[in-house]
Image (cartoon, rainbow over all chains, first blue to last red; front, side, top):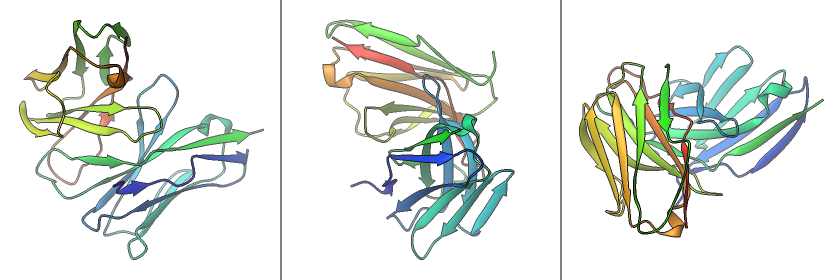
Length: 115
Length: 114
């Protein structure tokens, strides 16, 4: 049973436009959400996160939105750049601020930004 | 070295071999993790070490044996693996405490079992 789902395996966006990557979760105990970016032959790189007490977090071109009632989060990248082409993973964590975090990952969405 | 390093980057082994994967983190973190990534599947958490103590074994077969001698080093000892164990094995580290949940990953070891 997959608790974190990324239903779009791939997305193609033109350079300069907005990229929107979506993620759904089923476990209502998740209270912290993260996005990771992965290039081929490299490990995932932390991008941005959001706590369940917020509904938006912004960092430069990247904004994450959280809709707790819908158990849905999205990552917006604007403007999209060719260097953003990578696989993006959504991850979620349930509590455990005093212990090691256990992340549950989605299957990833491959973003291709075209010229 | 900076961040999280893993060696070797690629490994081919037979089903009767014994090998070890090594991970080292240079971030001063106190928790380390092993993940497995198979094709078309999400990253699967295998083991968690918190302050050198194993706190999670996510129903991993005994042919995978982790070792964490200190908070900077993590090993994954492999023996009598099966072809379906071929995957990308990723190590990560994080700092326990506060509101931080972010984990930082190494580049991974691409393992092929023949």
